[in-house]
Length: 586
Image (cartoon, rainbow, N blue to C red; front, side, top):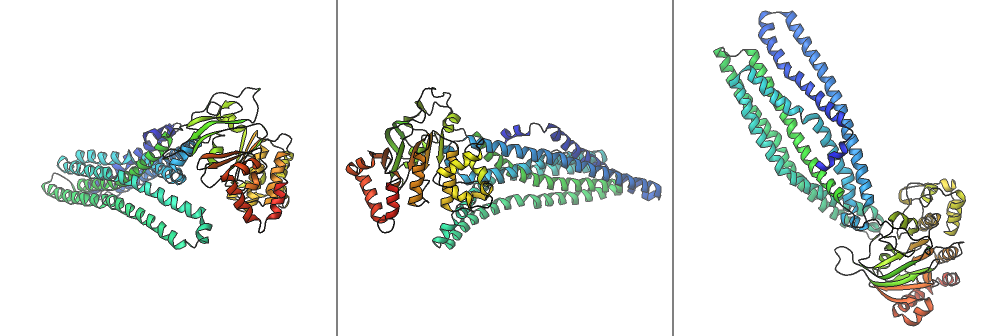
């Protein structure tokens, strides 16, 4: 939690003025019982209405100034807390953007979402209440005790004893609940993960009629969270009643002692009322302090979770070199590259070696889980090879500056991702300086020009979150166009044409090859028809290269490729022969 205080920098004035105005308000409150005592002891027995009116006006003035002080303190506290949380969210988001794929895989999306939202909100509330109450409540408690000593020492000893007992109760409960709140927030991550999984996969859930089982699974996680919250809630809830019992017992003792001392003439009735008022102030402030402790316990647990994310350091270190000016632009070399994912028991990719010359098309095919996506993810350095190396333009990608490396590469992932905005704003992700002519050229190559022309607003057609107002094929073509706007030297199509029909897929590949300066293109696909005309085809099987060569060479020598090709074309012969004809002549 201490590590997060750096984000309070710039709010020093608010952090000072907020508590100061709260202390000013508390000072006025401590004066009130003395004025009430003076009214009882002096004004009422003497029947001095003028004195009583003056004292009442004094109470009103103290109340007005106290209210103004409280509002001012709240303004400064809220300003500091909201500014702190805004900076913290910004820093957290910026830090997450620096993390590599391994760290993101390990942390998980649901955990990061919870820490960006719920955890930061809890810390914000903790900062706000700390500035308002952390100094005020102890000041009132100990101030009331000091004022009690100025009235009567024997009665004031009751105050001292009560405060000691309550400190033991409050801090004891706090020590018990801090680890419990950490576990609650961890379980909240699980509930968030289940919610996110069901909402993103709602179509699959309904397609398999799994609503009831998913509801039951969510209910189990939610019930576990509920039980954990109830457990910590019971412990925290014990603070208020225990505090009330101790304080009220002290009030009874105080009134009894005060009454006896009034009879003896050692105290006046007004002084007893003042002592009672001070005890009531202590009661109120200790209840506030108890609630503040609960809130700070939650905030501390959430702050530690946020700090752990900020302490994450990417395993990948950015390189410092740039390729030589005369290096072939767009060349890719895999030199005995292998990779083992963190925590995996075996290599996901083993001893891959090949060379892609500038402008060539490289096809990557294989069964599910064979390592196709893993192979192409090594090129933009989403993951690092654990053995061997990958070279782009003659330089090891681990030695190249990451920004320069990825500026040469455009990746179209398996899942087409569009962002809320317009078609134009999504395409400009590829190149913010692209003209409308550049956008139309990229759309034409990506076979997406008809998608834009069919929309009433053209390039300015709104795109909903995730591109849900477009079909799967339209989203894929728009994401390919976004990559082409960049004019990359290396284009990676990671099974990004799976929603396209064979004819459109063939036109797309033919258009890319006919570009004035065609990029080195990696096509990852499950379709043999999509990669059959590639200059080099890699056949992967369980992370190993089972075959490498052209379509004809692999048909003659690679059993894995033969099995994939024959099984697919046997299925296609029933209704997609025309698609194969177009694909064969692409």
